[in-house]
View 1 (cartoon, rainbow over the protein chains, first blue to last red):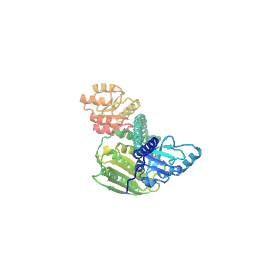
View 2 (cartoon, rainbow over the protein chains, first blue to last red):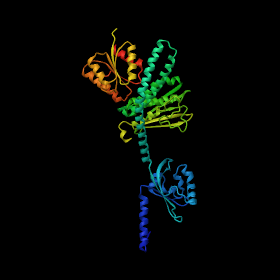
View 3 (cartoon, each protein chain N blue to C red):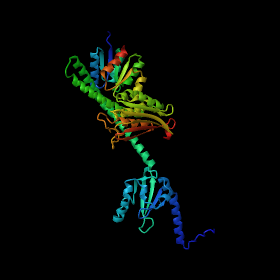
View 4 (cartoon, chains in turn purple, blue):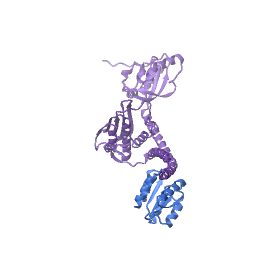
Length: 371
Length: 120
């Protein structure tokens, strides 16, 4: 077949236009930002390589489809409405600003992205040009940083509180103990009242210990620890309590593999706290499953129960969030803080009425810096 | 039975008087001082069976009292009491020879048991 002879542009301005178009096309194709153009109906007419990489779709899969396929709900449901509204009223919500919105990949994963939209004339084949930047990593880092700052300030506040409350509480306690001794000697009937004061002091003392625990988290010295040891210790600690509540204990641990760099006492505290929560979630019996596994560079300890579950909307990892009347809501905040200070991640899933699963994932020994 | 002499040092007057009264009721001879300087004076001039001292006090801290005991080779067991429970202070007290580190709020019966065990 004879080669197609390229048409030679006749005029200088035509040459300039073609040159510009060529440059533009190259920029769109090679930029690291996702570029998505749509027509006035919302159908995709351009989907560059970066967009393919970001969203996981090939251009041919999306060209001609409505752009809302790249959005999660509620944007997905509302996008046609946005376009209509803009056509009718001229009130722009997305045009002319850089906004952080959510995108949806082919895999279904929802991720944060920065979006800027440029509008072209109504008769143009491209009505709106969107430039998008995936900011998942940046958002994750910011969230981690915020969490660390939050935990650090909680630690500092706890330290001050433990000290400032500790001294007057000590004095109240000492006076009450002296009074109690005297009253017992004289068989004074008010001794029981003093007993109540001492019980309340004991409650405050426990609260103070929890605060001290928050304040102490940043002070541990690390050493290699086998999570299997941690799991084994936990099971031994809760065996009797589990029996009392007719709870079946299932343990699946891999010895000698899930070795992490950590503080053994603190990791035991984490596992024990999770296991005790699991027992408390099963007042009528059930199954508690403790698992220690290794997945690539992560060692994981999971504690799963078949208990009451966590009601929706409760942010149980935040300090002072609790569903139990007698608890301070500091337990899981401390667990989270310990796990974070080990460069690990605490996650959970719960179905009300079915049970809850907590997973502590820690970088394997020697992998801490890549976590 | 020999009566043991206790030196108790705490700058918190309520805590000091409560501890002094308690140990006096338990049959100890108690010398109570409310600052570190007075505690050092007592340690330098009198003989005691045991010291109970707060960690942070004006004049000299509990750790400084421990250092003095060590330097003067007094062979005197000492308990540090404190609302400060950071592990550094606790480890330091242990390294300087404290017989125990007791956190406030104090359980008097527990403290008494520690003291008796130390003296027996």
